[in-house]
Image 1 (cartoon, rainbow, N blue to C red):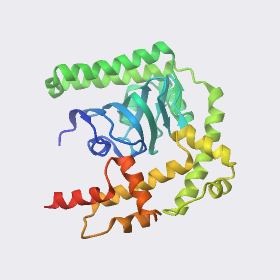
Image 2: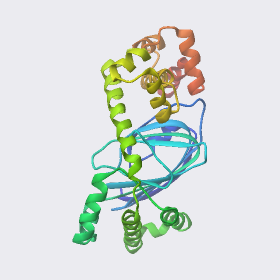
Image 3: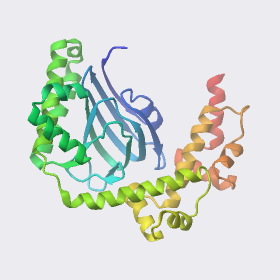
Image 4: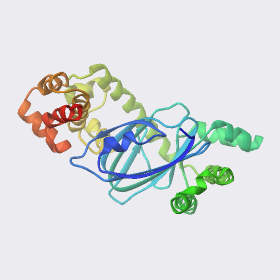
Length: 323
């Protein structure tokens, strides 16, 4: 496979959407009912890797970005929301991915536009002066979000949009070494300009750090309990926060109550297993029981509401595909 390519597709299946994100190793979890339309554009220029994503609905995405230094910006409507690495992303925030850290994002709402840029570490060390390198290292190591001015955010968004527009109009230019090099340079300068001009809002950082520490505890308790049902009062006691605070944390991050979020996570895990098996290998009830669902009538109703089909239909599709 060439190390430069361009993908531009629209999906009504969030699993197919994730499977086609060739530059990222991610897993998506559906939290809203029914199907949504999502757009994926991925551009690999060899060194530079660019993404444009148009999200609709309510979902979480976890996994790994491409190797290198990754940055992201987003925009959306008034009622939409994006929480990244346990922090609510504010207007004009530039997201800075820590090297080697996991990508973890929740999106909810309509028309959430996200641009990401990844450049290998060698590009930064080669292109920055000694003074700029010191400034750059300080910026990216001290914070995961930086707030840009309105003008700088517009400038950065337009710069990235223009690159995709050029490829859409004349995809053959992707085969030209000179074009790819020029776009890589433009991308590098667009990100460095945004980084060096950013004025970080330090007043937000203490609150964000406190929320992250709480989420670290919550995730540890959930992981230890595995597939088991975990009453909310036990979760709040184990984490050391009140039930009211726990509900607020889940609502701020996932726009769901703890009970509803944990149930939908388990429903997604059931669906993932059913899609890998066939009717002669397992029964729906066996998989459901493994994930803590014991009332099959309610389980089937909840499953159909979330995914638009009965669990037996998911399992039956595998037999039809095998045939």
